[in-house]
Length: 184
Image 1: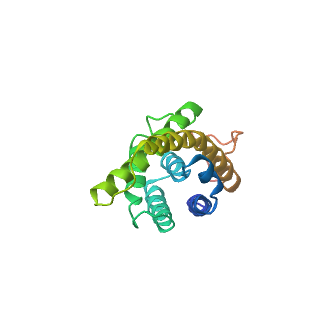
Image 2: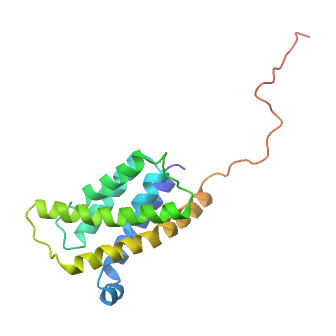
C-alpha cells in the first residue's frame, strides 16, 4: 500500500510531461510553455521521502528532456536540487497554508528554469536570451504559484482515497492498564 502514492506521483508526472508537449495552443497564446514539474517536486518534497523525490526528479527530468530541445539529462539536477532544498527545510515550512504553497511554487518554478539555464550555459550551449527570458520567468513563476495548491489538493485527495483512515474514536483499551491474572 505504501507504493501507491509514489506510483501515482510517477504516473501523474508522466501524464503532465506528455500534456506539456502535446498541448501547444497555450504556448502559442502566451509564448511560454507552462511547466508542471516544479509544483510536483514541491509536493513530493513536502509529503514524501528522499527516494521518491530523487525518483521523480530523475524520471521527470529525463521525460522532459526527451520531449524537448534540452540536452538529455540537463533538467535532472535542477529538479533534484530544488527537491532536496525543500526536503531539507520541510520541518520549517508551512505545508498547510495556501500562501506558503503559492510562494514555494513560485520559488521552485523560477529556480528550476534558472538553474537549467545556468547549467546549459556552463555546458557550452547557447540558448536564446533576451527580454523574452524575463517574460518567461514571470509566466513560469505565476503559473507555478497557481498550480502548486492544485497539485496539493489533487494528491491529498488521492492519498486519502487509497490509504487507511486514522481511527478517530479512541478505543477502550488503555496502554497503561495492567491485567492481573490468577492461577484459578
